[in-house]
Image (cartoon, rainbow, N blue to C red; front, side, top):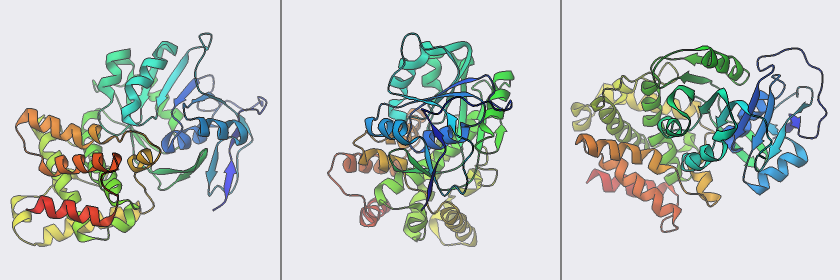
Length: 368
């Protein structure tokens, strides 16, 4: 697959017409799959872009060859950006800090960059899970924007990114309000994909959490791309069980779930007692929805699996772990999420291997 360099940290500043990010200083923290594609999309937007990564291999690649994206037929005019491992005390403040690290690195990331946030600046959380509250404890709730990502990406090699599916973002604030920085951020991110502003961020977050608890975690355990895994009926059933537990916990917390990408209705997709007891047309329809989603996002590979392969801690405690802990607080059993969480940790610690057979073991164990 061909790749195109979309920018160079050594490129001289070019005169460009005013664009979406004109005059904005933007810091992208983390240069994995999501951070790489976001950074590539912001090149040429008119913003002053800095990419921060502590991964030495990624940093060297960015410094040497810029940000590279596969499948690009043409590239915009070379756009300058900075790639750095750390910020200096003299670094000017940023209007937007885009957090694209894995969830386990969120606390450390925001602690390291919060002092570089402009007084009216905003931190944008791209992470799966429920990370906005963690960030809000550091910078204040009014300075946090949640960005629910509705597309997939992979990092093929350090500094080389592949966008595996189309889609955009759902943006919102914890208090449900809308202000100028939120609208400005939405305008900026439109260079990457369509943006919807919601007053129900928690509903969007919990719906996406239900999807990620199934997709990312089962992808980690199965060790393959989503398309191949979702062809198997027992994998779809595991996904339905995981999502059902998540929906039950969300409902217990008074969360009004929002459709994912405007189409996937988690309230309907959750299994009912009748679905569990016998085959039915409704159950077949739910399987069909997951099979279609698997086809649409067939190239998606779990970012959590990629993190494990790079020697990093898996984000499972921020996904299935959140469901288990919130469920325990509400008195709701979450056995499938709990078993999946434990299995991911065994894989991360080298006690089990990612494979379809390991997924089958999870299915058998949770059916008993």
